[in-house]
Length: 448
Image 1 (tube, rainbow, N blue to C red):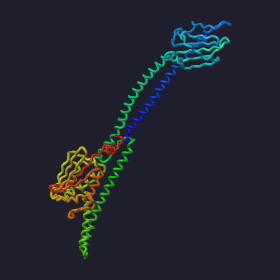
Image 2 (image 1 turned 90 degrees about the vertical axis):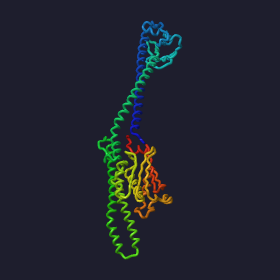
Image 3 (image 1 turned 180 degrees about the horizontal axis):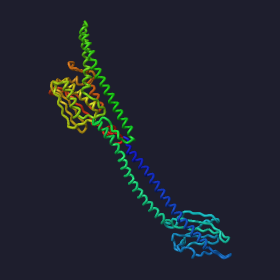
Image 4 (image 1 turned 45 degrees about the vertical axis):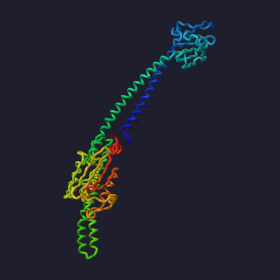
């Protein structure tokens, strides 16, 4: 099942990761560019100092006044280097020591910066500049080792990564807390639906977040509509069966008045119709008020059913045994019809006693209904759930009740079995498995 909370958490995590990665790259690139520009500006300043330190007489050789430049160039491998090329002459910093180095002369006004590899772990940032001084072309090249700056930058990047990771963790925890707090507002929908299934209220709550209010109203409308349709259908059947009784009485009187040799056949046909009408009226009384979507509260719903059956069969003793506070997750209307048909059939066949037992196990529930009647043959047991099959012609009925029970059991992946008891009577066993976690989640709102 799709979880909105999980989707939001995943999408927000991806967004935060992308944003933090982009921020880290941006900061790293900014620091690198800032350091590059800083070192480059210092190299340009040193290059200008070297140009100013270059002097010569009118036609004499060039000389470099080292007192006008920094002493850092005098230390071997100090990380600061220079080279001045005048065509015929070349001036090297003492820091270069014996490292061979050739530079490409640049035309006056041309500049060039580049990265180069120095001795050991040194990484050079170089600056070359072409100038014209005293009618002679000079090329000045300076370099600085930026490896220490790179180490600092890497350390800074590592700490920035740790800080961003910690910030990301805090944001994720805050995000999870905010999501739970936001979705907690939807718990009212789930609780309201559970209460509705348990029969504690008749409508869903209305004080819901605006985003789910249309869904709640639509569910409430559909439940109300379903309730009204079921009630109209049952009322119509009950009214029809009740209203047909008067025409049936008239037909019976007319049959008695007619002179024909088909009296027995006509009486049998009228009796069949009367049994059908009685069954529909009895069914309406057994099931009672329709409550679509409700679970079955055995302690609340079963005694009402037993009370109706006592009125229909006052000479029978009906006893029940089941765990206290037992609530079956199956639909109330379905189970009342299942219990009603099975108990009604047992009361017809019993001599005196009918026993209903419900046992709760880890895999589900076992419902057993036994009577002390004569039972049926093994051949008849195999055909009990066939539609229209009746073995006791003396009892009223249509032969549809047990077939309906079989359909209800099948709809919940349950089992319906019949067996003759050794001491006499028929035993009906119903096994209803528990609703799986997947089915339970599908029956709940997706934001649970």
